[in-house]
Amino acid sequence: MEQQLRGDESGWWLLSYAGKLWLPKGELPFGLAQDFQLQGERAYRIGEWQSHPVWLIRQSRARDMASVRQLLNEDRGLFQLAGRAVQLEDFYRAHRFCGYCGHGMTISDREWACLCPNCHQRYYPQIAPCVIVAIRKEDKILLAQHNRHRGGIYTALAGFVEVGETLEQAVAREVHEESNLSIKNLRYISSQPWPFPHSLMVAYLADYDSGELKIDKSELLDANWFDFDRLPMLPPPGTVARRLIEDTVALCRAEREQG
Image (cartoon, rainbow, N blue to C red; front, side, top):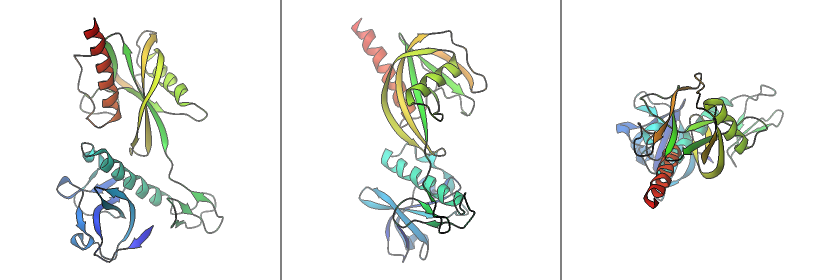
């Protein structure tokens, strides 16, 4: 899976290091390897986009290194490949040595894995499942401003799945911990790889069941019930959070029109 570049290889070039991507002019570079002085570098072919190979190179450049968030508004397939590149680079960088015996690791040439030639342990990239849920109460939707978010964005409640927990149990627990509410009519909607740093977002819709809204201030700055036609600043299009909110708005609008 790894190969040394001659210079005549073509495609999209994802140069990644420490969670950043090389984005000259704010875009992913496309063309021949030699166009970007990549001859002799080691590269991994991690996919294909628009019928062209997508390459990962574990390298940082002095300028134009930026967050993969800058690609959120791009095609979903491209964003997912960029996220894959960032996560694989982080995985390889974090697994230079075996966690069991301390021996130097080698990279598998058959799959995305690191191998220990001493104790024969095999390591794979770890993915952290995370649930996200939009909660509806009549013609209102519960939205929250998280401590980790900036810019006044309100979004759906979310949290990581804990050990020994089902996805459904995680949704109920997170909602209760963060808002003091109970929910019902939980239904799965979609999922989205989310490379911040290595999550898989599993998205649900739910209806309010009971409880008075009381936020966990260690997690949230604010939360409130918003009329579906008077919403605050929302997550950007292309995110699964935005889809959940738009799906809820569509349900509210349809019911209002039906009278």
